[in-house]
Length: 356
Ligand SMILES: NC(=O)c1ccc[n+]([C@@H]2O[C@H](COP(=O)([O-])OP(=O)(O)OC[C@H]3O[C@@H](n4cnc5c(N)ncnc54)[C@H](O)[C@@H]3O)[C@@H](O)[C@H]2O)c1
Image 1 (cartoon, rainbow, N blue to C red):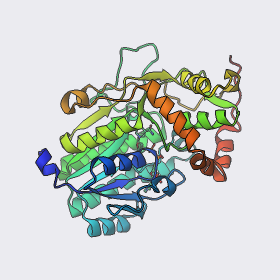
Image 2 (cartoon, rainbow, N blue to C red):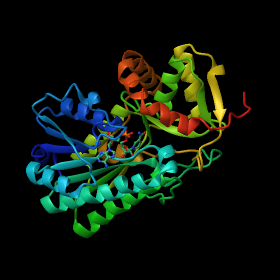
Image 3 (cartoon, rainbow, N blue to C red):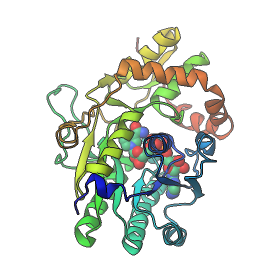
């Protein structure tokens, strides 16, 4: 199916799944600003990673609705589609933390694979103009540190390392299959690591910011030389909006910032910004199967859709750290209670490595 801008104006109602999480909430804010005429429905189960308070600035808007629902709940999802008849679904809902997937893969398979198929079944049953699957560069596995010339392209074979990335890769395969078998108008985007406001403090950047602010040890897995390609979350949101508007059904788009950083350098940068000593850094036993390097080639989305990242890392990281400084209440609420038990489980037994 061909999409042009005049057709696009007809696309009005968007279901954003996982919109109470990090990227989904940023996407909702972006879309509501960019397309004030759209109706946005956030479907979210509110797991530990979903936070309704994140959405408080839009909860009362007449063109926004929040529905607490599990994407695996077939009856609930069908009922919602029947009532709302959405034009577009953007699926951010997922279990997203690699460490948690190593501890308990099952929930990852349920939400990330079964949940995605339930959403697509609903799209088949009630009709849809576009189902967009938000995927990750982790489906490509990792690259060696000594081959900076290598990048992930859209046709790079899937080669996953963790239960998380395997569940995301499985979902991607299913999305492709629904496109081919049922002619469902699907697109997939595979993005590199995001950073920015509202990221749950179990992920590297917010974890280090909040612990550094509290003068607590900063646990870095292994030698910390692992490389990630970082993208400011709003640039990811812009790319998805562009794919919805101009992307072709059946296509996969890689999204990345060409901004590779070693984990240890990110942690040092946060220390520098917050004026904290590197002595807080503690190297701990590495994550099992820890991927060494991710590196996206975003040439296709640049050439075909004209997308380019707009926020330089040096600016984005400052904005992000400042956001965590200005919004302590948001993350302090999150890290009280259950999160403390989680932190102990994940890091409590890890051996401290003898490193500078
Ligand atoms: N964070 C990154 O750097 C990154 C990079 C590339 C791709 N992605 C992908 O982007 C998506 C969003 O990532 P994120 O970092 O915002 O995740 P997140 O963990 O912050 O948010 C996930 C959201 O999904 C909701 N959710 C979980 N299970 C659900 C279910 N069964 N039904 C309904 N809602 C459910 C949670 O409540 C939460 O609001 C994920 O699919 C992830 O794989 C993330």
